[in-house]
Image 1 (spheres, rainbow, N blue to C red):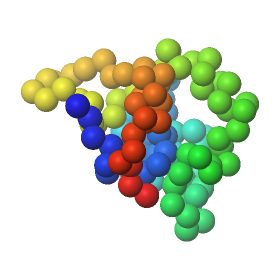
Image 2: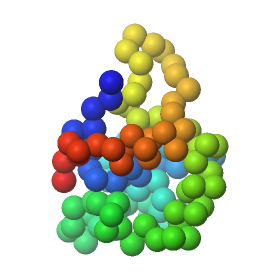
Image 3: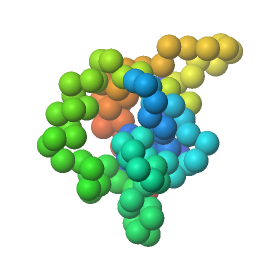
Image 4: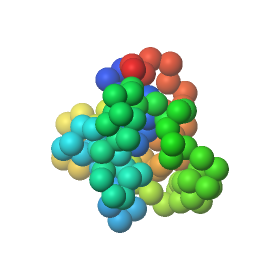
Length: 107
């Protein structure tokens, strides 16, 4: 089972968004929701990334995310099947549900 203990408290932190996919980014501080500068605003301001307090976590964005939750595939490294060369990822809906249920995420 996946382990999120190494993740920040944001399901979009460390991902790059591209054509319906959220892929692990080579830039650890990247935010998949930012289309302009890519880097996490909270981290740029010296704050710890946390989805609950993010300025992008507001109703309009949430509605858009929910609308596409079954269409967007996420590829968190924690879920990559051991011994496999490729995989289909998980839906954004599955990733968000898993992420929201974790108690062990570090700040």
